[in-house]
Image (cartoon, rainbow, N blue to C red; front, side, top):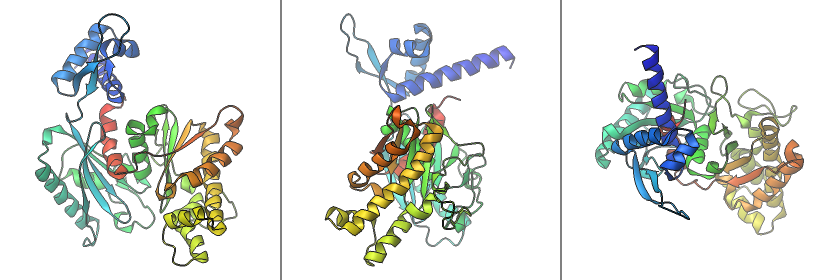
Length: 387
């Protein structure tokens, strides 16, 4: 292929992805596509006709217009293809099928308790993937690929789970390479927080923002960072480890080897440890919140202290990246109003941007099945995202 042909093929592929991405975000007319892309209407029509012929796009209703003929709207056909999502966490493994609209079509939990090592676990996972295909009757030709999300750190470029704390069975396992031996399709790996940020970007509150972080507060604390509508991974793919930013240089030793990490003070195990000193039977954040709402000042102080710690980590990120918003997810945002008001106040009192604009803090609206949707969105993003 000569350079001219190569450039032409690249341009066509780029424009096709550009148009697909715009339609995926929201229904749009051909004329509006031409305005947004800068392409001629003729060029837009050729690409749209191809997308309709391939089944990716459908004509769906008409747009409002004050005068003249109402333009026909184009929308993504959600069932034109699908992605598999595999989430492996410290306490469970889940598999599901997600369509192009981020809708969960099937889900199952995979029991890995009998697996002695990662090799045995992968055999179980492979069998469950095959079984899900058979049970749901999904066509292999419609498969975009398999997205895998696990605790970090992970090497997204080689597809290797590195050495997440308390995740020994999966240490230094090239999960992408192993699964490709069974499934010759597009298989991609991200850490849990980054995958959730992608889901938020396409299907949640992140659609409203070009620059935001998705912060997860759970057994650990992590974040996925979106800058200019793209997931930011950093030089080696390890970006977003907000839980391992230090908020106390003389603090306690963290499992990562640093001292005073946010995760040491504000993760769920750390919060529950404080609560158990007051009431040994406490076993969840929900119980802490319920007691705080009932007026128990001891638990109110735990909630307030949690807001102070989390705000310190968030302010560090805001001051470096000047993001528009923070989307928060995890059990800690159960009845989120009780912590969100304090968290927002602390962040907007301390952030350098406070005299220019406020930083919006929001609880994620896609918490249900977010683990599977996030994992599947890794390959949906790869399908839609521009280079």
